[in-house]
Amino acid sequence: MEKIKCPFCGYKMPITFSKDAKCNGIFVKCKGKNCKIIFEIKINKKQVK
Image 1 (cartoon, rainbow, N blue to C red):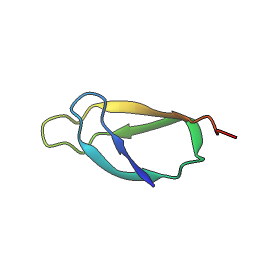
Image 2 (image 1 turned 60 degrees about the horizontal axis):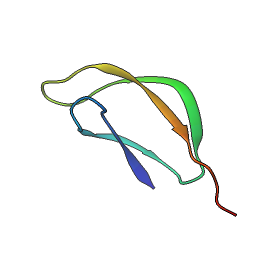
Image 3 (image 1 turned 30 degrees about the horizontal axis):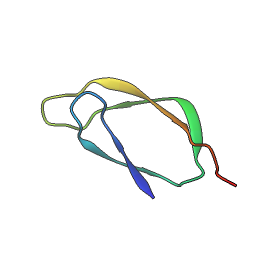
């Protein structure tokens, strides 16, 4: 599993996803001490066969 990082401050969010996850349209607020910016989580991993 991998953790989501804030694209603005680099804070590792307490959100994890599996290797075959796909999503878009999920908005979260950064938990970083001085950031608090809302950003969208987009995961579109291609599976290698």
